Image 1 (tube, rainbow, N blue to C red):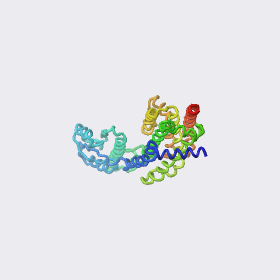
Image 2 (tube, rainbow, N blue to C red):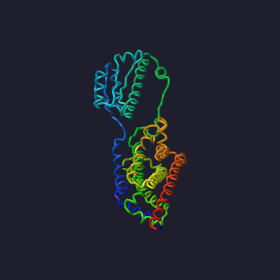
Image 3 (cartoon, rainbow, N blue to C red):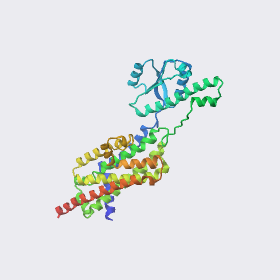
Image 4 (cartoon, one colour):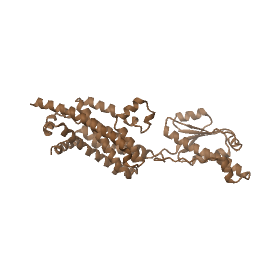
Amino acid sequence: MQLGRIILREWKRIFGLPVHYWVLVAIPPLLFFLYAFIYQNQKADHLPVALWDEDQSAVSRQFTFLLQQTETISFTEQVGNLQQLEQMMQEGRIMGAIHFPKNMERDIKSRHPVNVVVYTNAAAVVPAKLIYKEAAQVIITAGSGVILQKFVKTGMNKEQAMALVQPIQLQAYTLYNPSYNYQEYLVPGLITVGLQMMMIMVAVLLLNYEYKTNTMEELWQLADGSASAIIAGKTLAHLVVAWVNFLLVVAIVFPVFGIGVPAATGKFFVLYTLLSLACLGIGMMVSAIAKDVMLATDVALFYTSPAFVFSGFTFPRWAMPWYDQYYANIMPYTPFLDGFFKVYYMNLPLQYTYAEMGKLMLFIAFTFSVAILVYQKQLDQLKHAVA
């Protein structure tokens, strides 16, 4: 009964206090749909590319036609020199360019080295890689085709000619996100890191905000001076709200935009619950230690803001300096993300995430223990003050 009353009281505060209501109830749906809408096009295709053709031959026109048929490359401009190319790229009119040198056809047929240059704007890393990938595949294949035709015309059978042109066959398979789908890859990560930030930002106010609203004595009486009861009740109340947001994501946002991996929903839920508890534990610990609301909020902002960057979602952690790797390991989102990649994108069994789940449980055990010990001292002092 005591725990139930605390949970009910906390739900009333969630829907009654703007600092809780806006962050936990109003903003999440807007944020989820905003992230999904941003990547509505799902992948970068038909990127504007310039053509610099100094050969003006049948082969260069064939290459141009084949490149234009790809999903990524769309020739929108023609240039005649490097300065013009750079100016267009600086103006944002093109994302890349293809340069066919003079005498390309003659050199290919005579089997002399040919340097076809692919220019890309590496300031946009993913589009640059996509342009290079498509261009390299088409140019290598088409160049081999020109040589193959020449050998066949001399009377050589196709199999022998192919063995000379391409003695080694290379096949590349892109796993887990083969179409480079931004929406499928980025949206779940952005949503979960946003939820982490929102949960911690609210949790750092769960205990100290009672002083600001002059309700500390009421809460103390309701819990009979037990810090464990207060923290457990508040945690369960906010965990239910976190579950509601989870349902909003997997039952509405993902189906509406055709993303998500339904087979991994249960495993995703387990990791998400552990992440939620870890975030609430961190927030409770800060809230118990720092009575000043502004200080607690500043600490939460400083702690959560770089989570997406340091987690390894967009850049591998092993390539970061050691101190950045250390910082990444003191955030719960890092082990969550490692496990999330395994069970969500790779659809591996949950047992593959036991190490990550163990790290999240350590976060939970440590932060809640500190929060209870510190907060119990405050409640004991309040009891003596009231007496």
